[in-house]
Amino acid sequence: MKSITVIAVLLFAIIGINAQTGDIGQQVMVKAKVIDVNTKQPISIEIEFQPKVGNKFVVKSKEGTGTFEQLFQANETYAVTFTGDNVYRTETTFTPKSNEGYSEISQTFEVKGLAPGVLVEDLDIFGANSTDLTAKGKEALNNMKISMRFNRNTEFLFVVNATNKTLAENRLKTLKDYISNWRRLLDRVVFQSGTNGNNLQIKVNKVEDVMK
Image 1: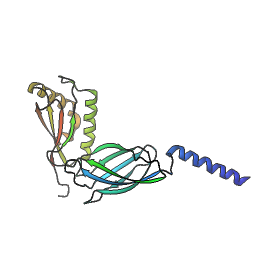
Image 2: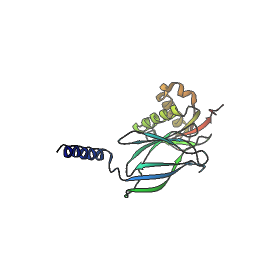
Image 3: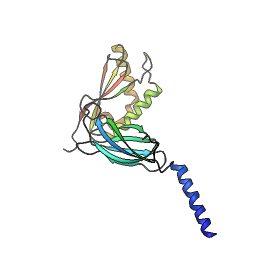
Image 4: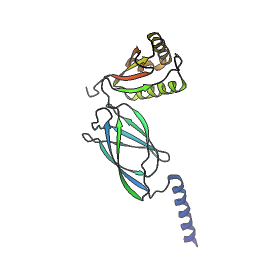
């Protein structure tokens, strides 16, 4: 009778774990490659994966090939963060799909390698024909602030565009006022205004060699 009780407890425990983590039998071996979205060359960086349930983990793509292999839970959505001194910090999601108990899939991740002139953000942050920042615009700028904290070796060029020079200059003033509390981060920002569009373009202006 005692052994039956122990077995019952174990079964309930397994059922509880499966309810939290999904079907642990469905796993996917992801054979991945990380490339620069502009040059299409492989790149070595750190990639953080955060499942909805459980602990996050970090893998690193290999030097020269940009490849890595990692076992994932099938059909689980992972929050992904790309970081490194050679890449613009970005976030995305990844869901390895599979309906089998075990499978292997190939995946290519594209990242923005840091080099002068590379466009890292193209943002619509102002209302139409306005100098007012939108809610989405403020959110985008706050996300940029976080990225800059990780890309400490990079100087960025902020180009504020509008349909005419006067509006562009006024928008630039609004932008400077909004991010005036960025403190030391502003030491790594160069500002310009222009009439090439209706957006905020953020480009890499300069990258310092952290090995020096």
